[in-house]
Image (cartoon, rainbow over all chains, first blue to last red; front, side, top):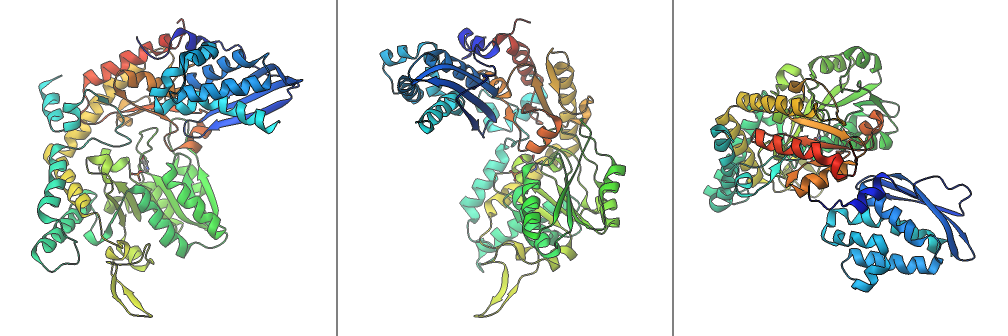
Length: 140
Length: 407
Ligand SMILES: Cc1ncc(COP(=O)(O)O)c(C=O)c1O
């Protein structure tokens, strides 16, 4: 069947790399999407302004889960400021407002660009990213 | 598609013009061409403010509204059409009872009892009322297939119970809650019984005189009528003693600077210009049901339900909530697919033009009680076909594969 759910997305959903407990996390925040009941708890370890590790738990549709897993692939090992910059690009991508070069920077998360044509699923795709932005800003 | 199916579908413009497989009938039904035309005809030929004017078209508009009231009364076997209050929908009817009867009759420490399977529309008005009155809201539970025990219900009632609110059919299980014995038990305790008929009235015969229910609310839009017109049935004696809900024009006999006299029911509860076009549409919808025959609609829904359930149980990893008897579903099939979130199910269905619902269907406490976060729901209407069901079942059987499971 030809659907939006390609292999990269389903792989991140069925076998997420970062869906586990993160003992002694430095920062944790829960994000919920009340209209769908998606719910994500995001945790980071941060030292010297660098995200050294990250994980999530929770429950939600494949788009919310895979998006969060791809986000963690992208930002772990990066500086907090860089994670925020990438997040801003991602959120713009979902509005359909990025260049191809910017999309490249998002690595696998770039496959979610089609969400810009799926208004009902935007909230699912951005849940992890919004939660990360909020968490990093609160922690400044 | 059979000849019969073709004939039925020709009555429904949205189905014959669009390439959609509409399986969200629990949310709202499609509208017959006749209903759409009759609403348009009302606005083309009778549009005037009903209940007020003394000129011909206004008199005729008023007559149309009253004919709709009579028709609604006879559809649920109410003794008197003055027991039919027009509302926007079931939600408004239930709120009306909570804000008038409830507000007046409930005191601190009293109890309101509702079932765990209620739609939020028959839950929140009562919870908020209890908060305002410092009364106690009690839930009574069903088993995991949605069956309520009369014995347990009687046990849960007490002399403090003033109001019982329960749906006559859950929008998740699709099972009919035969309310008559529950109404009787509530009355023996001195409580009134408020029934949410949003799902039952369109799918099973409703007889308020036989059940003795005190209030019954339902929505036109789930039974072929336009959105924005609903009915609250209330027993005459109760409506007469209740205070008004909204106040303003149309619901008074006179208003002076410091005094007023309210109209008799049902007008006391119909403040402001009413949705007369909607009432005309409701009348037309009930006439449409008559023309097809309610028995025939029920029979078809049952046949389609048999076909649906026999297909669903064959698909691995699919679990259907509620009864394993098709005839107890009334077209409503709420289900889960192991490992696949309901929103992904509905997204994949949507890519095939199949319209189903996903989420908690405005019954979140029920989902918590059942221990499922969310579910998908496919609900059949009289105009659905076996082809619709085949397409749905085929897509459903492929979903785990699409989602990357190697079954
Ligand atoms: C059982 C039940 N009660 C109440 C409602 C509310 O109906 P409405 O939104 O038309 O007021 C619904 C509709 O979704 C329902 O299924």
